[in-house]
Amino acid sequence: AVYRRELALLNPNDASGRASTTMQIGMVHHARFKESRQRDESEETVMKHAQAAGSYYRQALALCPPTALTHLGPMHNQLSILYNNIGRTEAAQEHYEKAAQYFEQIADHYNAGSVRFNMANMYIEAAERETTPARQRDLLHRAQAYAQAALRDFKHYQGRAAAEEANAQTL
Image (cartoon, rainbow, N blue to C red; front, side, top):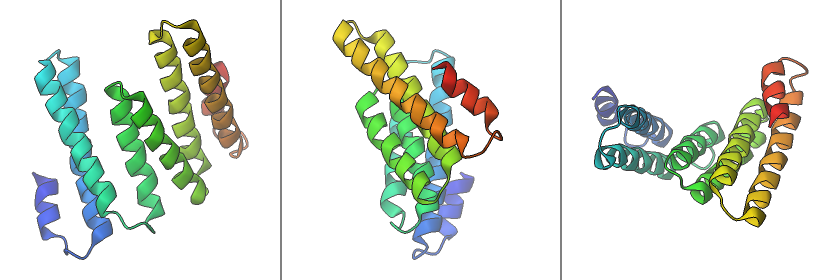
């Protein structure tokens, strides 16, 4: 309710502010999605929250000015996490890729690495669900490539992201 009031009070010409607030509303629905899933609520309730989160995330992206690079990376990242949570691997990949590109454009190697680490984990999980050996190998190769890319991103921090480097190396 607070974010909806904030949205109503924002200047209609403040596209960046409206996009950020809309994303926050999406994040509230995303949190509700996770909570309802943990409580084993009905699939209808779980998906209602996922659909609402996705809708707000997409609205935020549509509102966000193309020059607001610091906003676009996190927005694509949130949408990719949601898609991954609901098993839409290809849609998640698309938005993870965009998020990583935006983070790279602003020289945010830490978040670019975090996105790539998430992609590696997504492909490992997809490989575990896969029954075809050839497809499983392909997914594991993708996971390995993204883990290596994440490691390269974290190395920019010369040891200040040592925990993240170690996690990427275990994949």
